[in-house]
Amino acid sequence: MYKCLVAMALRSTAETCIIPIQDYLGLDNKARNNVPSTDNGNWRWRVTGSRFTENLKKEILFNTRQYGRLNWANSDLF
Image (cartoon, rainbow, N blue to C red):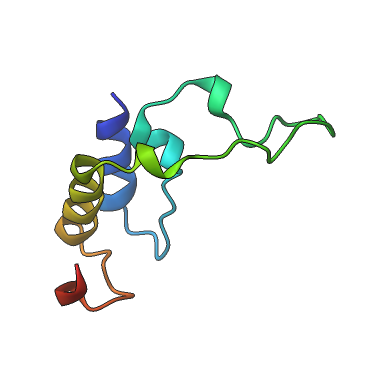
C-alpha cells in the first residue's frame, strides 16, 4: 500500500515532494516523528544505517528517476 502512496506523491505536479523514510520502510505509527498536540517525546525517532539496504537504495533511486525528481544531483554519481 505505501508504495502506491509514495508513487502518487512523486507523480504529483507539486514542485517539492518529501517522502518520509518511515514510508519507504513501511513502518507504522510507532515510528512517528511528531504527535500533534503533544510537547514531549517528539522528534526522537532515528533510523539506523542498517535499514538502508541496497534494495531500498535502488528503490528510492528508481522512483526519483522515474518520476523526474532527481534534479538536485548528477545521476552519474549513483
